[in-house]
Image (cartoon, rainbow, N blue to C red; front, side, top):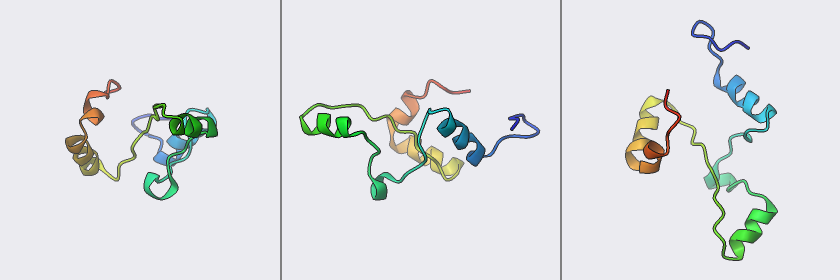
Length: 83
C-alpha cells in the first residue's frame, strides 16, 4: 500500500488505515444515522453541557468541496492542514 504520485492510495485504502489505527470510524450519514457519540457524551449534552464533536466532511468531488467551503467559513479557517 504505497502512497506515491505514481501509485496513490484510493479512498477505501485511506479510510481503512484510519479505522485500523483507531483515528476515526467509518463514514456515516449524520442526517440518517445520527451523530456517532458515546453514552457519556449524550448524557453530558442532555445535562446542559456542550461537548465538541469533531467532524470530517467527505466530498463527492472538487466542486462539492468548494461549495461547502463557500457556504461554511470554518471549513476554510479551521484548515491548518493545507498542503
